[in-house]
Image (cartoon, rainbow, N blue to C red; front, top):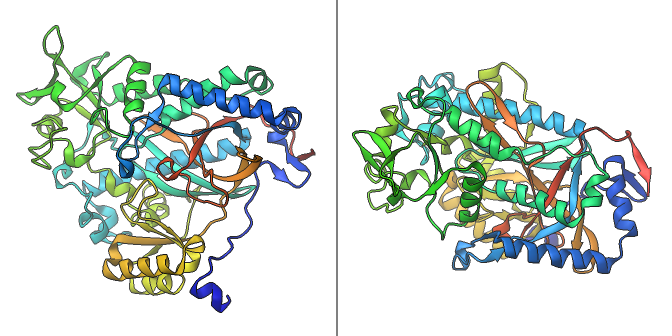
Length: 492
């Protein structure tokens, strides 16, 4: 490394794997899409992009960016060029995702139960019981069916033809599935003939699968048709559109805390016909705000007495409180060990090598190599509190070095991966942009369901590796082919 690189100039990241193909060789999964792009005039693509924006605005598919005033009218940019995965690629991912989420649920049950993995020294106890997301209120209590994270979003990145990595686990209240569904609907409206040329695995069964998952979590006394609701913080939440969308798709009520009350450890919903008992709450509220009697007493979003009703076995909360210890970035490095410990299997999906800054040796390495690493808050999300070393200035790296020294336990670091790129419609035409993938994993005590594909997020700025919508990223429809195309690449 040159002196100028180490002290100021951003490093050039390694070349990224292009999922479309290399040079004139197009990967077989992308053959039809590449041919479509070749014969479609740029003006027509731009017209379709404008049509897609109008469609999303009419439907009201918006989100809020809290750092910019929480504007609920902002559209997430939608790119009209789909991302395509071969069926064999998806099958490998699906098996790894199922394995990973089964291990995370086993870890949560153990962490709030016998804590065998801590006693065995596989994970330092301080990282679990000393974690801000650890909920003593959950100790000694098993949720209905023994499932803790019923809905998980696992973020994946790709670095080569067969190289996929889990970037992070989202085990609390993962969002974005409404965009996965709306992206497919938009593509069906905009490009019906293009979709007809592909045999695609459907995604529209997700609401049905979600409702089945939620009902399976209901207490036994609820019977075959439990009452399910979605608990939202309200209209100014960044994912409020998704809460309402999913409620509508499942045919259930979306409620706020004031719409529910607890009487003798039973949860009721206020309706025009009188109180109605609630059996399952798909909660999109953080733990701290769920119940002012159990957590933050100043919360105006939750339901007083909700945790008592939950612990009495009269209502199910999906996901269970306390799941945050499973998606903490300081716990993430130990997931492969969880898989071996609980399942007796080798991990099917790789982790990104991770340095815990609270460890002296790891911290020393991170501070010496900030220009090569991505530094993240251990409990951060949405792309906030993150520094990408190769793209950072010397001043930004110095600032993060000071933060790490002041609060080392708050930070982890990882190598800068060359995230794969896919063709994306940009201001100057079609160009490669970096992407990740968030599949959604639904768990009951009996099975794991995963809708093929997930939400592809794309970094729209040239060279950017940050795909989060809150940081200027967009989304794409993710196509999983029902059958693999002919192996190999085809000439463009």
